[in-house]
Image 1 (cartoon, one colour):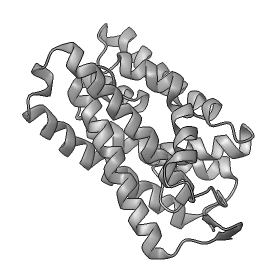
Image 2: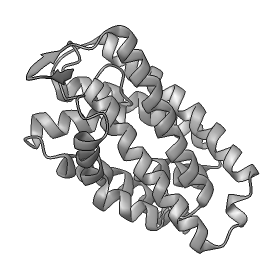
Image 3: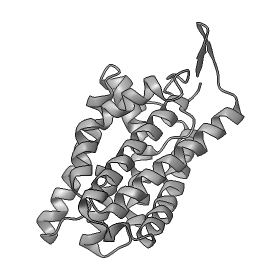
Image 4: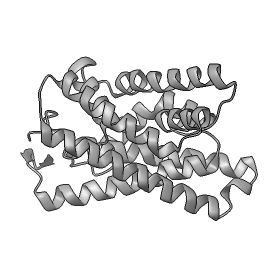
Length: 227
């Protein structure tokens, strides 16, 4: 929804499509940059990386499995069956998985992993910040969401009274737990670092900040996805 001169307006389809692709590219860019920097990825991306490291499967497989599983969980938590929303979640998850691979491979080809750590840390943190901005945009548009961010939206408004930080941290706690289990099994840990800590502790606040400062007239609407 858009808020202008004291009035709320529904977004048109052209606006929804534009915001969707803007946020998808920003989110994939940020995740790809954080993966390429090897200084710590967002918790769910890190959990997929650790599952891939433990099993020898591709990270995209676990990103896809996570997206599909959480898409069904969202329907249960929202207590509303919406097949259009489910398909949107899955479409976003699949598109995101592909684009993260494209961006991360591109940044790696540029030699980011060969940079000294004091260069890679700010690049990683910039990537984490852009992820929060992207989440803020497509949660407010509330048209097609990544299942994990749709989950945060549901938790935020249905279970945590609008508190973005509590919703994001409860979401991320599961991802961190998966990485810990992988470490117990394989005795190895990957994709966890300062970026993961910052994401876990501050991403909710980052989203709330972006709500106020990025596309300020874009506001949260009906989270059932029917607005």
